Image (cartoon, rainbow over all chains, first blue to last red; front, side, top):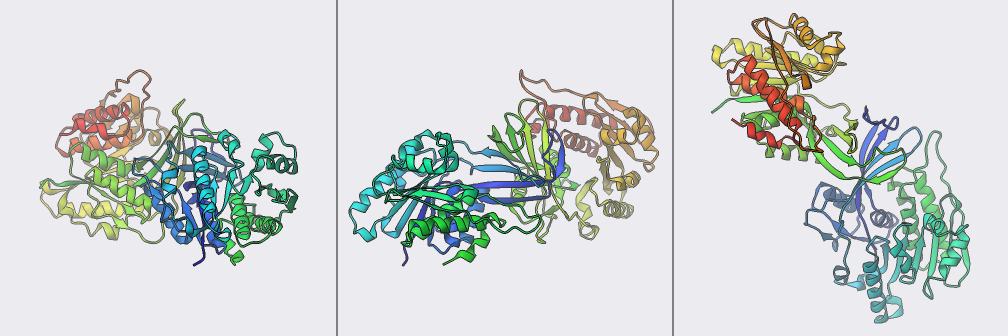
Length: 308
Length: 308
């Protein structure tokens, strides 16, 4: 049986209203469209991994409300394993975002709801049968110490098995205000760092960003930075700079780019490629190709054309 | 067994986000509170009737989505009968409103979603066992011809039974833009007409409004107009003007009025009082008392103190 790729982090719900015009305060209007969508980096990445042909598992917390039922149905539809998720019955509500999309200019106004969300705990993670996995990816959630603890646990496991049975680890450092993430660069084999993070730390170019931040990474690791329409750069285990251009989608007349989940798609495609033993350059290119295609389609379902 | 009061019209869902500040376009923020609430005039009125001690039934259409499950749970909680509702499986979605409530100034910005909603049809209504009801109230939905047809059906039924077995009928004429409603004044025993409607038709005072519009009502009927903080007026079967002052709630320091569903509460209290044989003045006063109390509480649950 092929080993799984596990993605640890958040699944939430986006409740999307598409409006004709951004609403003035105290007005009312009929919306053009209204729908629910799966959100959360880890949920997106695990679903894209499955679409691309990986055996994919999501690990996170579910509440017991209607929104959680919706999310479980989505994971089932995408054939993503959720058997190790934790169901929290302490009256917490699934994190939800009310999203107002302006059809005229594509702006997205977001109202987040999510208080006291219980993240996955190390004591739960440590019950997993790690022999099932070939790659474990973590979304950089606020529970930084716990993430570190879980990554160390995988390091310890890796010391006990043959080289080809080792689990590769990766971590996404995205949010600029989660300062605890600053201390996690040396905890995983692959670090994904966001454009916003690189800019917020004062680096002038993406190349400068990955090269300077590579000093914080541990030996034998690699750091990747996807940069939207400029493609992606990386520093590899060889200490050298690698890069791929972007692959912008061909849009039909009147069609807008849809960038939602494009970053999560890049991560999924990169991880899949690398987990198959492809080179850093190949993985960067595949990541940019699939993320570019995503920007030219509504949702993610069309990505199954990249399935291998 | 006491006969039921039936309310025909809409049940929808309000998805409410309470914000610190009204969101600027393309921003994101965390909300202070987020919850779902039952909406729709008929749904509100039937729930209040039940809280006030009536045997209450709601008749409307349900979709088959999560929102419909929520609404059914709400009706069950309020002990409102829904056994004659129609479940529509044609891929329609429950009408939903995204409501953004600004905690600083109480403004409500509303994004409606509800396309091609199937209203209750006369052929369905005509299957009801009318011997179960003592009062049937209609919300003035866009399906005006169908509403007229159903009210005529009740008139025909009333001709076949003893005077004390007759069903009393009422109709709420609220929306100013539903011009089909202009032709329905002579179809029910009690007409509720809204402040907005009266003003939109060019009448200068509530008294002028009900007196002039009474000419459009049928013989032996009465017309009622609740007018918020100015109480309510009516013209009765005697052709005379009747009125009640408002009963504003006592608010705690820092507490705001909550007027959502206050009109639906007035209608419920009025109908209940009148259905028990109380006078027009008594019903007007009870309506104003209960609606005033509603403005001083969150939601409607506290109205059970008026139960009789």
